[in-house]
Length: 224
Image 1 (cartoon, rainbow, N blue to C red):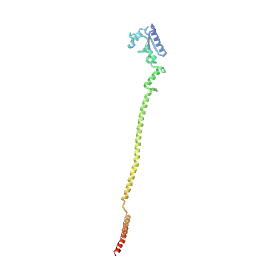
Image 2 (tube, helix red, strand yellow):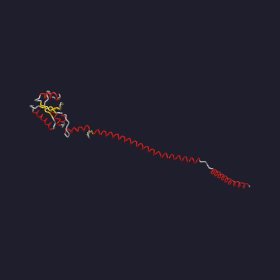
Image 3 (spheres, helix red, strand yellow):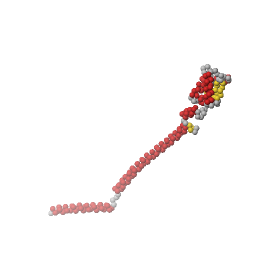
Image 4 (cartoon, rainbow, N blue to C red):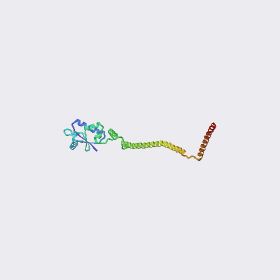
């Protein structure tokens, strides 16, 4: 890409000469290749410049004044827009050229890119990596939360089982004791125990008869 600067070598205007020198001097300082095209001595250059300057950039009389700057066939601007770009450290953007590494404009462009897209590492936008890591971490965190919830539910179930086990044991023990008590009540009386009971009853009868006998004797003696 060649930068074309249309100028008038034989212009009688001091202001135009100063502007042309300012543009050429700055391009040389930046080591930008350019081609000066004189419109004073070359009618083709004059006609081409007038035809390719956009209508909105032409003065009211329709005749653009030098210097006019082009990048090949693309219009860059006149002296005023070039001066504004120089003040903003954006001359390369004005010319449609990539800024060289380490230049102020390159640093400014890098800062602007970082503000919009995030820092770049190894040719990759770091924000994309951060977003992917965030998604992965979010998935991992969700899985961890699910695992924790499952563990809590298992612990609660274990606690319930551990609490229920002693209660069941106590109930079983009470049932066993009740069964044993019923068994003792329902156990049949042996023959020996039946004999002992009858002997006791017989002794009680004899004692009662003996007590009644003296009373009868005493009554008979009184009657006599």
